Image (cartoon, rainbow, N blue to C red; front, side):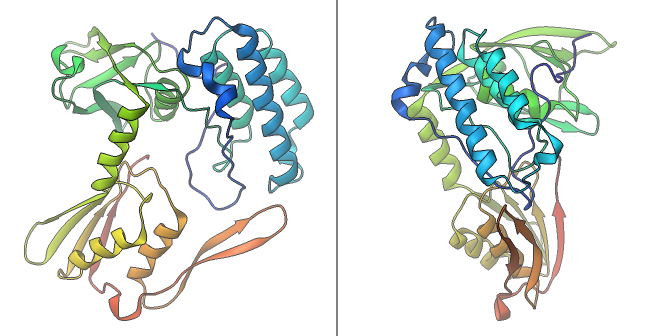
Length: 324
């Protein structure tokens, strides 16, 4: 039985979700992070130096801007002192990233996330996973990938990734680990077979450089939504991200207005611009709607979705969501 991901690596990192905390992204000078090309870089002294600098900058940001001056009862000085001691004994960037992420996510706060300096290379494993109920399924396999060559198929159940069993509670963490903190050249995957046993596969990833990543992201942004008319009254629209301009939402809703019913599919949508989400919400109400409040250390600001008046959609709306 593979262990579940737990506190020794990272406790929890919640995606961009609520409106109750200060969100920060640690930006490291390119000159500091230039050795990050190789996660196994042997210059341990530089690795530790970077880790400690990141911890100290994060601590300063939290002390100055975190919305709760009491830090949920956490002792900031003790936590970061312990984190620096851990980093002082580490030797690689992935190890340091895990240690930094650990101390940040102990706040268990949706807007307090650690984004490590971007590596010049990352991994594309050639397949995607998703929890459906309590089981982890393969939901996409890229043509021509090693995952396809090794026989992975959409609909198969994943019983293990690396050394861990995927669950609804930890799958986000596994994704964060393998893609952001410690990309792998080869990823071990266990797939369920009839009779209750499992087969083990070693999937070769496609190593992507910075240009590949930018091109991949541009391709996704070119198709931020897809609508399909199911019949004369019903249309289904899948919105992949909120990291788009408001004009994209306007374009989608122009298609929607021609139908009496719409299914808005937000499964897998990890969020994006708050202003875009507010803009979309305004299409479904004939009056302004208070969504919530953004609380910072110094102010409380209301988030209001303003109605689009004559452009408001008056039909039936069904929204599909999942754990993402």
